Amino acid sequence: MPGEIGTVGELFMLKVLTVLSLALVMNAALAGAALAQQTQVRIAVALEPPTLDPTANAAEAVDIVVYQNVFEGLTRIDENGTVQPGLATEWTISEDGLTYTFTLAEGVTFHDGSAFDAEDVTFAFERIVAEDSLNAQKALYEPIESVTAVDPHTVEITLKRPTGTFLFDIGRPDAVIVAPESAENNARVPIGTGPFAFVQWDRGSRVILERNDVYWGERPALTRATYLFIGDTATLTNALLAGDVDGTNNMAAEVLDVFAADPRFKVLVGTTEGEVILATNNAREPFDNPKVRQAMAHAIDRHALIEGVTYGYSQPIGSHFAPHNPYYVDLTGTYPHDLDAAKALLAEAGLPDGFSATLKLPPVAYARMSGQILASQFAEVGIELELINVEWAQWLEDVFTNHDYDLSIVAHVEPFDIGIYADPDYYFGYDNPEFAALIETLNATTDDAERKDLAIEAQRILAEDAVNGYLFELAQTGVWDARLEGMWQNSPIEGVVLRDIRWVE
View 1 (cartoon, one colour):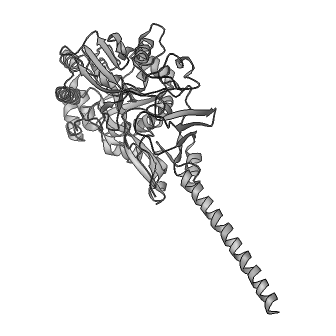
View 2: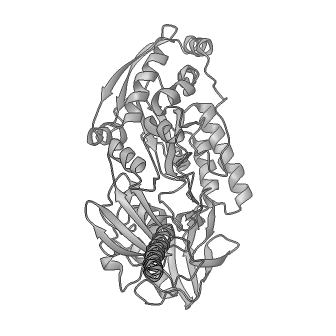
View 3: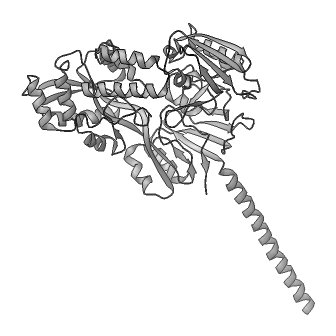
């Protein structure tokens, strides 16, 4: 009996140990799987890209996925809008500002294994400026006179005239370097030199990228990134709360409080390149009178607009410049909200009882909501606005092309686009030779300190002339798993850049 009891006891203990061992193995496997998962990220974006070639399509959705991830340029733009080295590790500029000599990174390969060298750079830029080019920003690269491969790791670019934004412009998604062997197929199968390589595109659902383990630069922490296309706010909210996605670069402002109150998430609120303006037809009465424009500027309550339109998630602006740009200056105090000052200026302009005008609004929520609030604010000083809702095609024809409008509301999203005010034929109808001369000098200046001074002066002129009503900068409102770090808070250029994103427990 004692022997039988001992045998049974031993068998029981053996079963217990076996179960415990299996549990330990399973726990270890689950822990390993969890650890492996923490090198992958699932990012929800609002729109599916129509193509994956940023050099042949203007859609921001393309750049969101591939810029600085799959494709790289000679330079790159960082989170602050500053130019950084890219495939060019350094460069020199001739005294006349016309010749740029770039030293290229060595040991770089495209994702298909082909080597990167100076000939790829010449091919990429010749493709951009070619007569049949599909590049959406082709005009930016018109100053290029020639691109010469001096040797495999040196490229010389000669310009027709000095262009102060040239280093920034070649860091845009439109100027990434593509190879002649693969360029034709980049729309479907993008092949670049970046830290992530394209894996698959499930149309209507997702794009998957994987880490390029032979990347020439610093290897990112992530091994895989999946971009999921979720355009509906309710669906995206549910996906985040359920843990089906790890974050999104831009969440609708009306639901941000849900995530701000949940410790599982972090909300990153920054700026974009979208300056929301009350576009004003300076060539049409009474807006050709600066006093009228200044009166309207005094009538605008930016903070009420921001609360009403973006739930407080935007930054007021006083001129046509993004607050994250190192050249930005805060000019919101130029014409503070002051109804008495507005009425006095209208009286000086010969309009003591105010006037009536039309406000054409494109089909985006920020414009139409801003229009309703501005109409109420302007009514307080005697300016009666008729709100006219139009679709984009009509807006482009009436406002942008034919200049058939009084006022409109729209976001200008191109980086560093203050130069549009130097063109009297642009739809604002602003004709200021002094400003145009300033922009010409700015465009020809390469010294950064001098460029900053000129850019600040340009901002001041626009603010003081109240060329448009400067309202607010569209916010980037990212919602992310609280354990993630390295995401861009600001968006000075299109893209969800993966290189610095990592999980932190």
